Length: 432
Length: 90
Image (cartoon, rainbow over all chains, first blue to last red; front, side):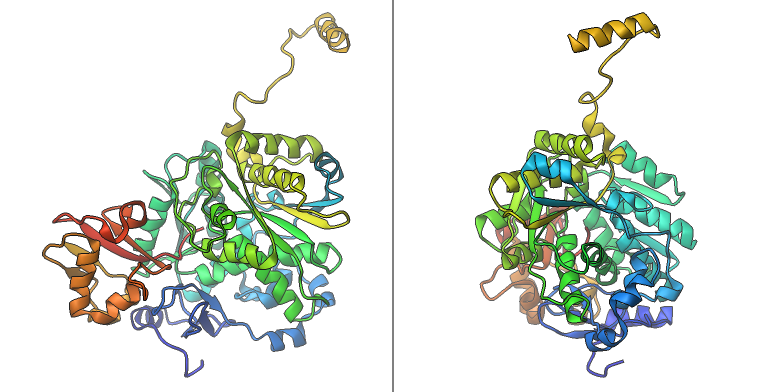
């Protein structure tokens, strides 16, 4: 441990009680003022309340990591363990990561994009990118000695925490807004942990969890374990670059809720270059996609300001419905610094986006995916992507979880009796 | 009324998790009263322009004051005021 590291007095007592350390990361550092803290279940700077991040020794990592060592690693996020703040040999792992990067030629032709890829993170164990962050967070939680893990969730995280906790034999308490889609509720409850439905929107749930986390008794993956948890999102960038042949894309379109995924995608590319995996400094323009009914980050981007004004969410894209996003400021900054853009889309456009992706590429995305595709379409129409540039769109969760959004919008084309004559008559009418 | 102090700031309140204020006209007045006895605490909550810092959330009852009237939000007697770090969730 560094002697210069600040030890949070209140948390320090708790840490002593737990009697463990996180072997891999010795220090956390404030993103704003740079103060250092001993690695512990803490998440913001005691002085400026800005987020803490793990400190990696990139020179040391560069001496050990290579494209070959990555390729020889597990077929999961843990192939990138050198750049994760958790020990790979004691990992909580149900197979997150290494999801397909699909060349999306039909969708590209539809949108007038020359080279488009879909990163299909619906292929994760609980069918969203949240398996990545939770695999990391629960590995750290177990290392720290927590016997109970928890989170505030808009649905996908709830699935991932409940599933990984079941595998790791950890008790779980998952907090969700009471009005969440049935698909999200069932795909959480099935894992057998405790599911707490809270009256109010996600921001109310998050406040409750922030207050509960103050006691320090549970490992809240997106509160007191957030510095570790959020690093798991970097693996999306690591994979995309690896799957593109060790290069960064020209553009990436990212759905934005808290803003963490967007900022960590960019950080992942930067780290890959720092440790020598990418030859060139990443030039990727990072674009943000939100729903009109919950667009605090895109509103800031379009308004040219770094002030995030919280909103009361009103959108079918509930998995993105965070009105007061924790990393909104950093997400807007990342978009601005990379020359990216932001687009917000209506509920109708979200449904159209879901249908467009499904009907061209055979991928059924949840509402967040509809947001991404609809925003991608707007960006293409605005001429954001130049000829010959490579565009990657992140599809972060699968459609069965939010099937309600399509109720009454898709269904059978024909309704007939089980009779060959009737069917052939319908076919004749169709071809007439 | 009571003001709940987050773990991160309790070294400035002698370890107390709550501070009591008899009455205040609005949130600015309330923070001013706290600041009189705990000047370092006020500095952590408000920036050089006297506005609530970017990474601080303050709630009157269950509502974030950014949805109310900010520092001009009324704080009726008996209201619970909560201070929490903003960087959580997602």
